[in-house]
Image 1 (cartoon, one colour):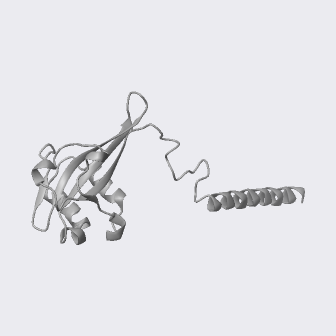
Image 2 (cartoon, helix red, strand yellow):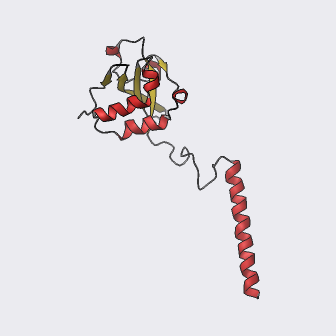
Image 3 (cartoon, one colour):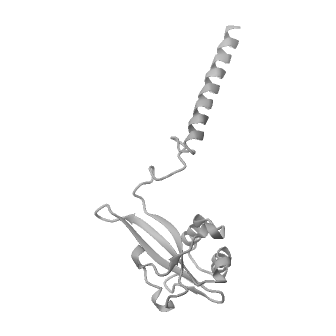
Length: 160
């Protein structure tokens, strides 16, 4: 009998612990150690890669292929959420593609198809890191130029 009461007490303590933990996680948008959804604390200072898409309709194509900083970005930034495109999808596509086959290039075109019909776009990879003096540094590397009838790949990327 005593063992049964002890088991019920353990179950009660476990349930209370899970309820408290669940409430803490729910009220902090999932941000509760050790299951943090934001890696900014655990991976601070590590290099990172993202993507940005610029509307370069008014720009000269020949001047677009230089790596630049934020101030040198041509055109206007495209709001990808208005196209129902997740920025991480394009960022992963850019960072995980080693050889740019026509099929890979077509994949990026499909993601941005709605905007390509009305604008010329340049897809950049943003690479961030800390410089020697612990200041953030972000370089924007042009990858793909997309217009309604043209796809141009940065000549420094591997093509198959």
